[in-house]
Image 1 (spheres, rainbow, N blue to C red):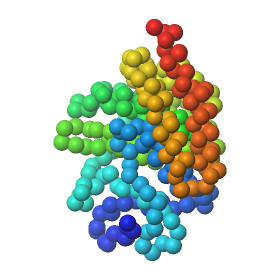
Image 2 (cartoon, helix red, strand yellow):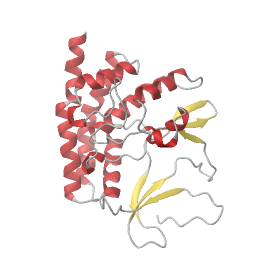
Image 3 (tube, rainbow, N blue to C red):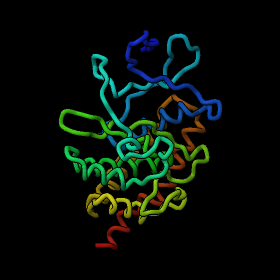
Image 4 (cartoon, helix red, strand yellow):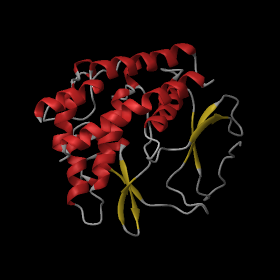
Length: 255
């Protein structure tokens, strides 16, 4: 499939991203991180994407299907959490994960079950090195039955580029270095979300079961260099062994 440029006043159905002058492997990174996220969260909605060419441009691009369009091209209204929480556009790093969970819990028409889905997305993102999960990287769609989490998007293993602190605060602590992330930090996040110990253990258990599938998805991919694949895999192993794998043990001490 080769998307064409939309004609004037025609709503586009895809987004094209090209390699960054600063980070030439950024599109490959996003592709690999996204397919790994899909493998970790098979029951969730993750943005559809592939590598390809766009008419009029010689280089390969990351082509992303816009989830804010219906099948017949009509616009679907959505809002990033930056907007939903009333923050100015330049304050996307100024909030907390908890504020998003509180919004879902307190807003009529939202589904409380989506708080767990949000928690699982955050854990999976941190496992893959996505430290840049700020308030503009989470959004909700306006539907006939209320607000619903949008598909996960902009999944990038940002730690590969030196972004070593978590974008949003946990337990009132901002700028947590991902290298210092401990199981009790993610348990505290679950507590802020109002999740039970069983729910937090279930989230860690799912990531344990699905981690081999995420590794396989990246290992078998032909996109990107071997070094970028290895870097994401190495981070995933480090974060698993040092943090996520220990959640169950830490929770058992609290029971």
